[in-house]
Image (cartoon, rainbow, N blue to C red; front, top):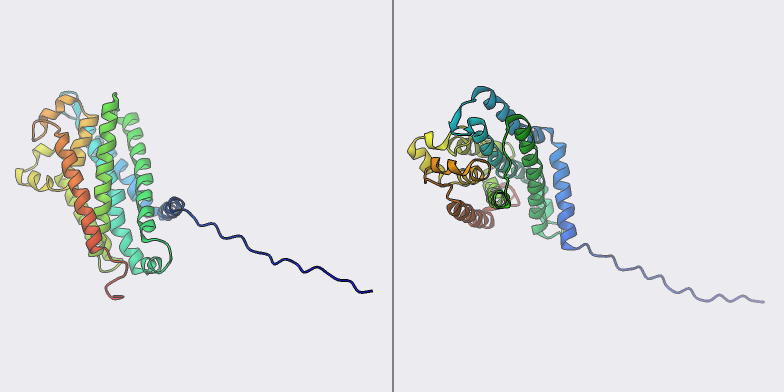
Length: 281
């Protein structure tokens, strides 16, 4: 007696589910944040430097620069702007050349992953670290230096759009300036002096109107000065606007200049960004 077996139907593998664009960007952003947190030097410099500077300057200067406005309160607004610039412009301008020199960007370009996902990951990292740093600065400033938080929705809205436009402009400029560094080691040498000069001439360490006129005019070309001025309108009394060079906080001009730098930064990114080093072609 013979036994017959029925032929087994072939097993058809289910088609692999394709990861959506949003999920890819979030995954890349998570990777960028993890890499940032693993670099202790970057974490300490980015998160700790503004707080250390506030503690030092608060111990040295305690005078009022205007009725109801202490130097420390003025300085804090500048350090919030500096913190946002550090995590975006300075951080990207230093780390992208390192990734390019190590061949990381070249390998990314050779994968099927859309190129914009890599940029999205950088943006997500900047936003998350920037929000965390700003929250930490505000907490320390309120607890130790009596910084008054905005009391109206309009003030918080101003804080939001100044921060968003400022971070966008600094992020794009950070990606663009990264192409000037020929090697991984030269990234810091290219970016750090630019960041320091902008801090000194943009009203971060000193009251802006006490700087030489030519220095004020140079600073007015770049985003940091306008970020500082926009944030002063949020955290300092409205009456302090009369102390600004234009006699007011000029929020319309703040939006115009920061928006213009977003466009300039985007154009520079599209025309100058390199995935490989010059020696790789």
